[in-house]
Amino acid sequence: MQTPVFFHADQLLFSPPYEWDKRGYVKHPENPKRINSILKALKKASGDFVFLEPDPISQSVIQQVHRSDFLRLYQLAQENIPSGQYFYPTFFPKAHQRDSDPDNIHHAGYYCTDTSTPLGPETLISATWSAATAYSAASHLLEGKSNLVYALTRPPGHHASADYFGGYCYFNNAAIAANRLKEQGSVAIIDIDFHHGDGTQSIFYFDNQVLTVSIHADPNEHFPYFSGHANEIGEGAGRGFNLNIPLMPGTDGDTFLQVLTELVVPRIKEFAPAFLIVAFGADTYHKDPICDFKLDTPDYNIIAKQLASLNLPTLVTQEGGYFVPALGDNVVSFLSGLR
Ligand code: SP5
Ligand code: ZN
Image (cartoon, rainbow, N blue to C red; front, side, top):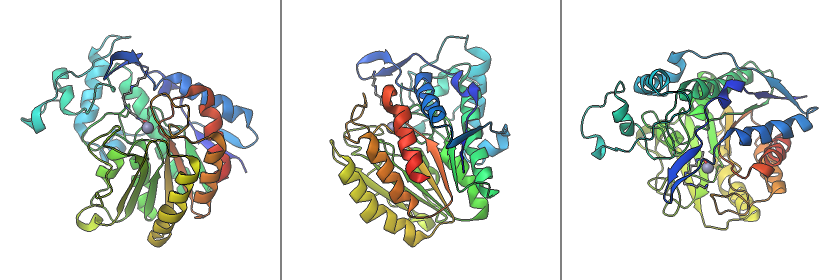
């Protein structure tokens, strides 16, 4: 059986050429070339995959996860930023010092964590289609049409929370999918992007119907810096339903697999969810330009097989992965392991 891949071409319209990082203005690692690499590899293995277009989603679907300010701010960007230009917030208010106004572009920093995630006229359209792929993939899973679905989400989503965007993420695609799946049962989200899935954690922090697990680089050294520590375990009803596993620089496939087998899989089994979401990033790859783990292409296949042993209806969202020449092969290695 072919694995459905959800994708819409308008996800590529948004393409800021630069981010502003510690060294200044640098090439943006999150660009459409990444997606072309993935599409090419999927098409090469076309016997195994079938491309499906997502249905459009309404604003209310997004607002079940995100504050309506987001939509307003992205609309403002759509209406006011000239084509080819981008707005980088440069003013970040002190701890939400006053009410925010999403009709004022100068307030964009209120909603934003970093200078890597600018706004442009196409942010809304691309981010909405990205969320739509995740939502359609979730619906497909609920309809029982396949036990495995891949949402080729771009822009990525796991750093976006209910009320902030950042880390190249604008809407939290995995959270929007989880919210849909939750209508029919509990959900475990395992985030294996190199970076901590801070947005996803925060959205479900008080929720005991969604178990969030993230394996990632030590946040004292890497983005998102302010969260991802092992002592963040959830709060209220959600206490015990968030698991963070920060790992050392240079972590290789063997260590990653060991952590998954000994800590993650048993926790998910104990939770016994109805559905599994994998927020998959290939930025754990040894040649990734902005990360420092040491995984290789076959490791993704082995990791995926370990997750497949859970035997759950599974939805994969695409998060990071910035070494473009190997990105497609890494995604196919992973998806083939799940199949
Ligand atoms: C989805 C995801 O993986 N987001 C990661 C965001 C990481 N942001 C770090 C920003 C600094 C990296 N700049 C490197 C530029 C190299 N040309
Ligand atoms: Zn990442």
